[in-house]
Length: 385
Ligand SMILES: *[C@@H]1O[C@H](CO)[C@@H](O)[C@H](O)[C@H]1NC(C)=O
Ligand SMILES: *[C@@H]1O[C@H](CO)[C@@H](O)[C@H](O)[C@H]1NC(C)=O
Ligand SMILES: *[C@@H]1O[C@H](CO)[C@@H](O)[C@H](O)[C@H]1NC(C)=O
Ligand SMILES: *[C@@H]1O[C@H](CO)[C@@H](O)[C@H](O)[C@H]1NC(C)=O
Ligand SMILES: *[C@@H]1O[C@H](CO)[C@@H](O)[C@H](O)[C@H]1NC(C)=O
Ligand SMILES: *[C@@H]1O[C@H](CO)[C@@H](O)[C@H](O)[C@H]1NC(C)=O
Ligand SMILES: *[C@@H]1O[C@H](CO)[C@@H](O)[C@H](O)[C@H]1NC(C)=O
Ligand SMILES: *[C@@H]1O[C@H](CO)[C@@H](O)[C@H](O)[C@H]1NC(C)=O
Ligand SMILES: *[C@@H]1O[C@H](CO)[C@@H](O)[C@H](O)[C@H]1NC(C)=O
Ligand SMILES: *[C@@H]1O[C@H](CO)[C@@H](O)[C@H](O)[C@H]1NC(C)=O
Image (cartoon, helix red, strand yellow):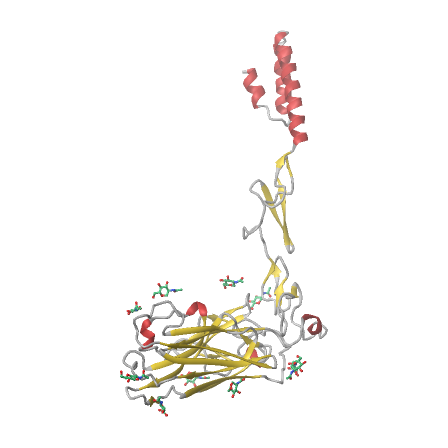
C-alpha cells in the first residue's frame, strides 16, 4: 500500500575542484540553456562533480542533464544560485476492485548525488488524490526531519481548479536546508468507491510557481511528463572566512567578493557593487557603464560620468549640487545669478544714462562691448532696439 519513492542525495566525499578556470574548449550552452562556471560540460570545465552538466546532442533538441542522471536541466539562475531540473512524479493506482495496478512508472527508485546542493524552499510537496497521504522525510545537516499532508474526498463536487488546499490536492512547504529526502505515497482505502473519478494518487516535489492544480489531474495527471524542481547550490561546505584561506582554490577573485548574506553551508561569490560578469571566473567581473546602460541616479540636468566601479553626476554649467536624484540634485548657482543680475542692472543703467544724455554713439559702443561679454544680453538688446 505504500509506494516508496527514494531520492537519496548521497554526500560526495571526494571533491576535486577543477582549479583550471573555464577553458576555451568548454561548451557555453546546450540547447537553450546557458552553462556558466562553476557548472560545465566536459573535462576541466566544471568546479566539482556536483556541477557536471551532461549535454546530449543526439536528441532532437540538445538537452543538458543534471550530472550523470536522466534529469534534464531546464533553467540555470546564476543570480539566485538555483538550477531547475525536471523530476519524476510518484504514482499509486487502483482498479475498480481496489486492486493495485502496476505499471512501468510504478515504484521507481531515483538517486541523486549532492554535496553543494539543497532543495530550494521555493518547492512544495504536493499530493493529488481523494484517498491520499504523502509524507516526506529527509535530512538537514545530520538531523532527520519529516512532514506531509493528506487529502480525502468522497466525491468531486468540491474540487476547485487552481486551489490545492486539502480537497483533492494538498501541499506542504519544504524545510530549509534539506539535502536528502525520500517521499512516500499511501492510500487509506485503495480508492474504493472513488476510482471512477480518481483511480490514482500522485505526489511530487515541484517549484510552487510552476504548478497549478486542475480537477482533471484527479482522473489523469500525466506522469509521463516530468515536473520542475529547484535546487540551490553553493561552493564547498566552508564559510567565506575559512574558504578564502585556500587562496588557490577560493573562487571569488578580482572584483568578486564572498557573499556574506548567504548563511551556508558553503560559500557564494558575487561581483562587487558596480561590476557585472561571472563572479566564479577570475577577472570576469567588469565595470558596469551605468551611464551608457542608463541605470544611473543622475537627474536630467546633470551629466553622467562613468568611473571604474561607479559613476559620477556633474551639474551643468551654472548649476551646483551633487546631481543625484537621491541627493541635492542641481540648483542654480546663486552667486552666479546675483553676479549676472548686478552686472546686467549696472549695464542697463549706464546704457539708459548714456541714451538720456544723447550720447547715442557712446551708448552703441557700450552696447557692443556688453554683447561681447559672456552674459545673457537678450534683455539689453530688446531695450536698445
Ligand atoms: C566538507 O567537505 C570535505 C571535502 O569534501 C569533507 O571531507 C568534510 O567532511 C565536509 N565537512 C562537513 C562538515 O560536511
Ligand atoms: C542521448 O540520447 C539518446 C536518445 O535518447 C540516447 O540513445 C543516448 O544514449 C544519449 N547519450 C548520452 C551520452 O546520454
Ligand atoms: C534573476 O535573474 C532573472 C532573469 O535571469 C530575473 O527574472 C530575476 O528577477 C533575478 N532575480 C534576482 C533576485 O535578482
Ligand atoms: C488494498 O490493496 C492491497 C494490495 O492490492 C491489499 O493488500 C489490501 O488488502 C487492500 N486494502 C483494502 C482496504 O482494500
Ligand atoms: C524516512 O522514514 C522512513 C520510515 O520512518 C525511514 O525508514 C527512512 O530511513 C527515512 N528516511 C530518511 C532519509 O530519513
Ligand atoms: C550533528 O552535527 C553537529 C555539528 O554540526 C554535532 O554537534 C552533532 O553532535 C551532530 N549530531 C549527530 C547526531 O551526529
Ligand atoms: C478545470 O479546468 C479544466 C480545463 O483546464 C476543465 O476541463 C475542468 O472542467 C475544470 N474543472 C472545474 C472544477 O472547474
Ligand atoms: C491556475 O488556474 C486557474 C484556472 O485553471 C486560473 O484561474 C489561475 O489564474 C491559475 N493560476 C496561476 C498562478 O496560473
Ligand atoms: C463503498 O460504498 C459501499 C456502498 O455504498 C459502502 O458500503 C462502503 O463502505 C464504501 N467503502 C468506502 C471505503 O467508503
Ligand atoms: C566572462 O566569461 C564569459 C563566459 O562565462 C565569457 O564569454 C566572457 O568573455 C568573459 N568576460 C571576461 C571579461 O573575461
